[in-house]
Length: 94
Image (tube, rainbow, N blue to C red; front, side, top):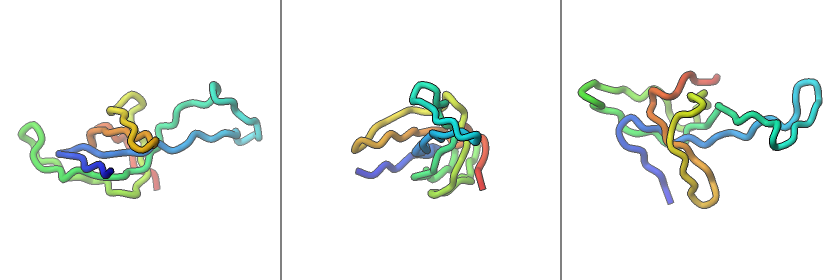
């Protein structure tokens, strides 16, 4: 099944949290903080949103940082995705 976002929506796949700190401490599942870095899977066409033109600035394959509580979570074929508005993306990680 393929997800095709509409308007200014972006489909993201969250990356896994680090399991070891820089100092070498292994974190348990409950001690891990939910990551805010995600990979862009699909991008909507942009266009007019609420009467304003929107140009999409992210593309599939980009790594981005999102607002912690943004988007709608969905699970397809045992993979969790989040659909967010482009405005909920805070930065592109290079």
